[in-house]
Image 1 (tube, rainbow over the protein chains, first blue to last red):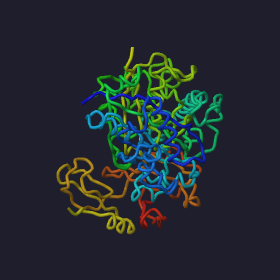
Image 2: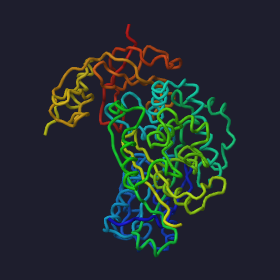
Image 3: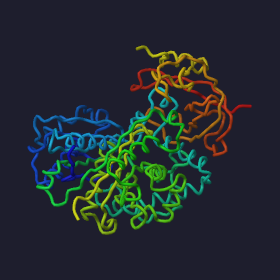
Image 4: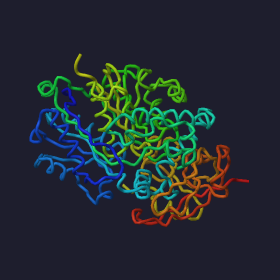
Length: 396
Length: 136
């Protein structure tokens, strides 16, 4: 197996409803990634593209083929990945394996979504398709409802008064908004930086106890990364970021995860695979882009990833231990809750952020200094698909 | 290989307030809803059984934003119930005002009935769903 580097990254602005097609959005991100890799589309041997709901968003299936032709990667294999909100991470992980195996030397991976374009009603319906269609959706489960139920379960399991937990969750939101407000690619760029706890706790209730500000927005956007084998990467860039560990795990419907909930067992298995492969420990991680689709999701994720003890992550956010300058810098991009969550693109957006952070190319107010080891964490469905990747800076 | 218990038969039984499941001959775990393989050990050596429907509420939420086509149902209470024999089952809670549901619901004993979700253009037909109410 050969080492694999990220040699270029690209990303559109994550946004509310906009007018570019999914093919156009991905092309924008892809050409940015290819261009900064000092490559042309003709150098790309294969495409790996996450896209969860394009069939419904635009009536477009098999989007990967149209994207390949659109950007001038003619006749190459082009695969679509669907793993709900983890789609792009699945795509990047598979792309990694193809390059690691030696079969391809240069590929592009990423994802695209127009979830915001669907509007709240259809987006809520289609996101609920990632719960069990026969045994969960008939009861009216929605995506916020899954994490709302996990919030109450978390409070009960760890004996944290609900009001205290809600205040800790508000701290998660405030940190996300602070970073996203100065990230030009973020959906909430220029917004919510000074939001108060009172406003978060008092905003519109989506599913008790989650308010609007506990939830990520629906988003449109795309992100892309170019992966290359080590020998080629060294010729293309002085700043290769190596993917040194990968993990992926799956799970059934929420109720069948009862041996572990509110822990997400698939995440523990996936992240441990990635850590072991990379030979690193949670304590070694400088920054982590994790799947904060809801504020409670940050607490659950940070614990399963090994950063904090179970039931204590809320305290970490209160004490700034999950922020830049703390134990681990979590979601300096603003995360899903502020940068946005175009579900099929989100995991590639996480890789984009970690690469930009390592290169020192983000806004000073949210720059993690001297970051050497990064972790991505992407969750699909109610814990049905989990993907983690360890990235390491390839220069001194 | 035929599955021991299919959705169709599970659904028809649920409409009669009967909960069908599978008991593993290898590890004794009970699998609900139906699957090809035991959710604990992966064995396909299982018998169809009727599962006791008594249980207690593990968690809940009141949903205020419904999916397209189900807007008129809000607000409603979604619950996950731990059945006496172990499995967790998602359903709705009725008989409690959704707007006043609190953490005090957790641990409360419930009994099970059902209602049928008629389905929408995506769902390939109807599905019965558990409707719980507070016991006693």
